[in-house]
Image 1 (cartoon, rainbow, N blue to C red):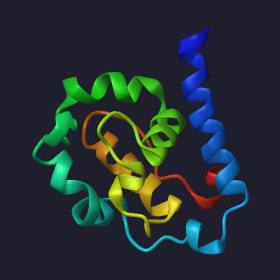
Image 2 (image 1 turned 30 degrees about the vertical axis):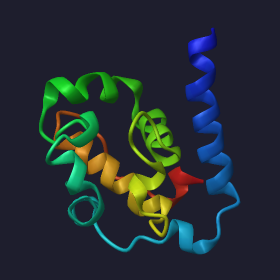
Image 3 (image 1 turned 60 degrees about the vertical axis):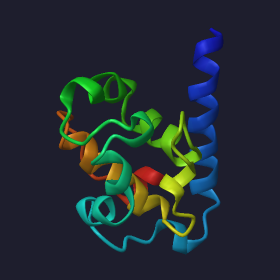
Image 4 (image 1 turned 180 degrees about the vertical axis):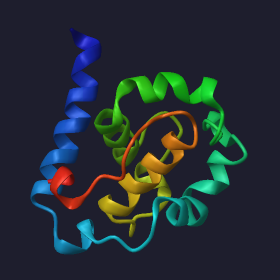
Length: 120
């Protein structure tokens, strides 16, 4: 039971933050690929601090198995060596979520870009 509490807390935080988000938090400024290339590539292209490399299906498989909402929630608040929001404090939840979906798709998942409705 205890191992389930952490993911549920992260997801609850994500949902609560999105529900009370200011409009800027939900704005989409680019595609998931564009956000990846701007924010995520430094770690997820090189594998710094054990970041799973985009395209490495084996490394991404257990993360993808967590599910889109759980993985996005964990990454949004920071997980393992990854800083919250990938270290980009001005990144919107919408853009961040699209980047996570892009990386997961590029690594074997069948995830769609979340829309604003899904994020609320």
